[in-house]
Amino acid sequence: MMFNSKNTSPSPPPPPRNTGAVETLIGRQTEIVGDLRFTGGLHLDGKVTGNVAAAADKSAHLSISENAAIEGEVRVPMIVLNGAVTGDVYASEKVTLGAKARVNGNVFYKVIEMQPGAQINGQLVHETMAAALAARQQAAAVQDYSNEHRMIDVQDVGVQEHHAEGIPD
Image (cartoon, rainbow, N blue to C red):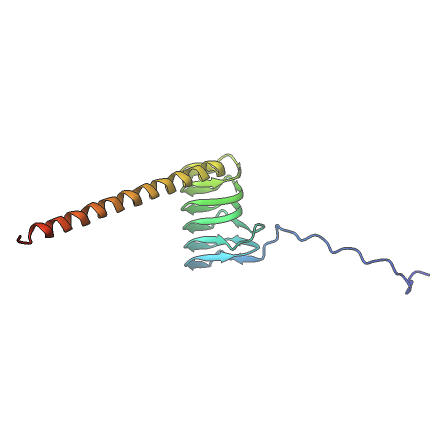
């Protein structure tokens, strides 16, 4: 008997989710003006004038074809870049730069893979270096804030002294 209706074996588990799947496609003739947020997989063949960011999704990935372009900041966990980005690229997991990739900006990465021919007009900054730079900038901002308040306090005292001198005894 080929079909047994009394088969009590559990059904097989569902296949694992393919994290490399493209869920959104922006076509070659499409131009988006404004910021773009996405989850899952995004493939860009067109142009985006604005920032591109993955919404709190560690498995999100962006692929940019050789004819595509982004003018703005890119913040994604994983990116495969064959086109052009004018702006900084932040990849919290991995950056793959194809032979036709062009970046006019800094590339912040954890892991990077770069093919011969890829061009970066900016700095390559490893994640640990980026954290150190951010800490240094934050410390400088706190110092500037402290100095600014000291000047205000001195100026306030000067104003009070000035008024005190103008009052007849």
